[in-house]
Length: 242
Image 1 (cartoon, rainbow, N blue to C red):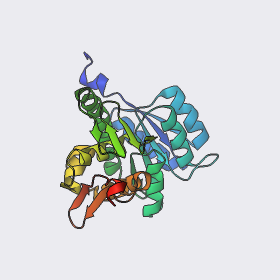
Image 2 (spheres, helix red, strand yellow):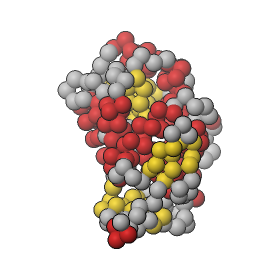
Image 3 (cartoon, one colour):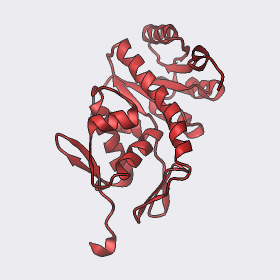
């Protein structure tokens, strides 16, 4: 790549928010960072805009007219891999897990600071670039075969009992990071650093929510909670041994 730093950082971010004042404030803050911001006020138009713009990141409010943010997120991520940061007015863990299950990579609860929003955006955009490098380096990485659960890092495919399981990019990276060190306890801070590329511990609840989303898709026993520390991957036990 021969682009200058300024050119390479010219990312397009789609803001989906039906509150005009907040949408404008977010767009202005993104523009101040040197990014291109596009705004939609409902989920249906967001799906259309995402198909046309092919944004590098989507900031998606959950409560939207015409089509809610979760359904819009499902449709956008089903047609093209793109990181999605959802905004929710409810600090309810179940809502966040549902949002992550819909294809979102991260969430923020309103009200939030613009500084924190920008930090989350930067982390997600860094992850996209790092994922490309990791994917290239994983081309020759062996498949992680745990019997009923198989993880293919090079193809980024997970199968359970022979059936492919759809994981978001963040969920896949989290599972693979844990599975590469079976039974080893990884702290939330370590997972934030390796998976989210965060340098502080402000998002430990994000780790918890993603673990819950993984358990919902793969079963409750694959990831063990070590209270006060973090999580460990527990390889599936053969049914014949139970």
